[in-house]
Image (tube, rainbow, N blue to C red; front, side, top):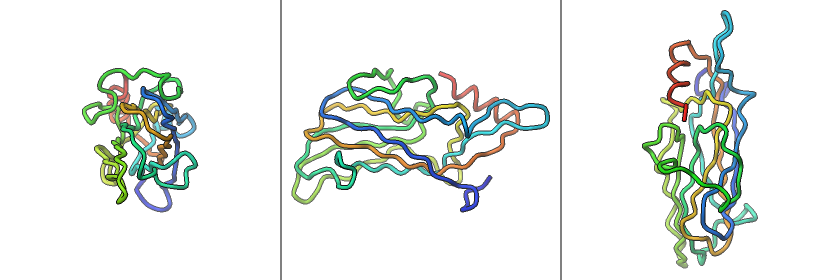
Length: 183
C-alpha cells in the first residue's frame, strides 16, 4: 500500500489530563487491522502509520487551552500491547517509555501552559513518523500515554489523529518488526 487517497484512512483516540499529576493510558485496539501471522501463501499484515496529528484543547474539545492555564505534560503514541487503560494518576509508566530512544514510540509531544495574554508556546512534537518511512505496527494494540508532571490548572484533552494504511509484509520484515515490537 502507498500513501495515497485510495489506501489511507484515519484512526483517532484521546485522553484527558484532569487536574492531577501522574501517568495515564488510553488504548486503541488494532486487531481488525493487524494480522502478524502468515498462513500458507497469504502474507501477514501490519498497520502503517504515516502521520500523527496532536491537538491539545480544553475539556469541551472545541477551544484551545486557556491563556491563563498552567501545567505541563508529555504525551505519546506507543506500540505497547497489554497495557490497561487508566486515568491520569492511576497508571505507572516504566522509565524511558515516552521518549525518542524507545523503539516502541510512534509519535510524541510536549506541552507547557504558560499563561500569557498573547498565548502559550505551541506544543512541541519531538517524534513523528513520515510519509516516506511510516511506523508499521504489528501488535494488536497501541496506547496514547500521558505523563503530567505539573498538574493542569484546568483539565485539558489530548486528541490524536493518525493517517494509516494496511500493508502486506514479507516474512523477513514481519519477523523483524515482531522482534522490535516486543517489550
